[in-house]
Length: 449
Image (cartoon, rainbow, N blue to C red):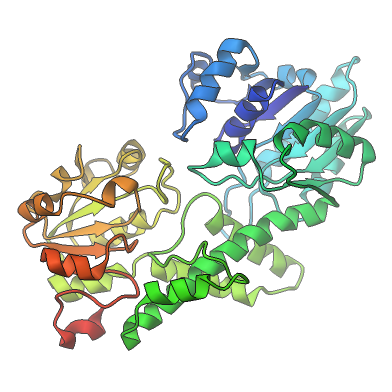
C-alpha cells in the first residue's frame, strides 16, 4: 500500500518505518526542513532500540521517503496517518490545533486535485473523545471527495516500540465504515499473524480505549507508590508486598514497581486529558485527580529525605544517575529527574548528572547550570550523595568499591530500588530507597524518611 505519515515525532517515525519494513511504500511529512534533510541522509532523529537498522534499510530500499510537502504526501497516500503533537494545554486538556490545521489543509489539497481518489485519514495521535468527528467535519467543509476518518490509537512503549509495532498485542480500529475497516485490516494483518486480535469498534470507543489503558497503568504505578510510602511509615518492605500482590493473577506483576513517579510523553498528558475531558461532559474522574496529585508529589519525595540526612543543601555536591523518564530512551519529557533537579537548584545544590542517552536533551534545557559527566563514576567525584532516578541496566551492577572511593560519603538515595538493602549494608553504604527501611540510618531518624 501507499502510506503517508504526517509528523515524524516518536509515533510517526516508528509507524512509518515499521510500515515500510512490512513492504509498504511510505512517505513521511514534516515541516522541519533541517530534520527532513537529515532523515533523507539517513540520520535518525530519536533514540529507540532497533529502529535505526530498519530506518536505514528501508531508506536504502526506497520504501521510506521524507518530504516537507504536505500536498505531495496527501496525493501519494491511500491511507494518511496523522501522527501530530497533541500537547497539554494550560488547563490540562489536549491541544488539537495541529490536528485541526493539518486536517483543513488535507481537505483543501484533496479538493484541488481532480484525480483525488478515496482516502482514509487516520488519527494515530492520542486524541480526546470526539476528535474523529471533528476531523470529519473539517474535511467535509473543504472537500466533496470521498474519504473516511479512522481512530487507530498507538500502544508503543518507548524502549520497546519496534517490537510493540511489529508484534502488537492488539490493534484497535475505530470506524463505522466497512470499507475503511477492511482496508485497515488488510494493512495490519501482516503484523498479527500469530493470532493477536484486530478489534473493531466505533471511533469514540477507540479514542477512550487509549486514554483508559494509559490511565489504568498510571493508576497501578501510583497505587504502588502510595503503598510504598505507607510501608515506610510502618516499617514494612514494599518489595515483599509487591511480590505478594503480583502473584495474584487478577492483579499481575507488571507496573507494581514503586519509585519516584511516572513521566514521559504519554501517562502524564493522557491522565490529565482524560480528567479534563470528563469535566467537559460533567463527569469528574475523582480517581484520576488523585493519581495526578500523588504522582506530582512522588517526583520529589526524595528531597525531604536528603534534607533530613544532609542538612542544608546549599553548596552540597549531588550526583544524579539517570535523566530520561525511563531506560532505553533519550526522552526527558516529564522525567522525575527534572523535577528533582529544579528543586535541588532552588536549594542551592551543585549538581553533576549522567545518563547513557539523554545528556544532550538535558544540556539543551539547563545549559551551564549543571555539570555533565562523561561517565557514571566521574559523576560521583567529591559528591556528598548520589541520586538514582532512572533504572538503566548500566546502574544495576556498578563497581561499588569505586563508588565509595569517589563519593565524599557513601550514601545513595535510590528512587528506583535497584539494590537490595541488605547488600548495601554489607557494602558499607547508607542507603535510602522507596518503601523500604533505610540502611545505616539511626532509628530515631527513620520518621524523617
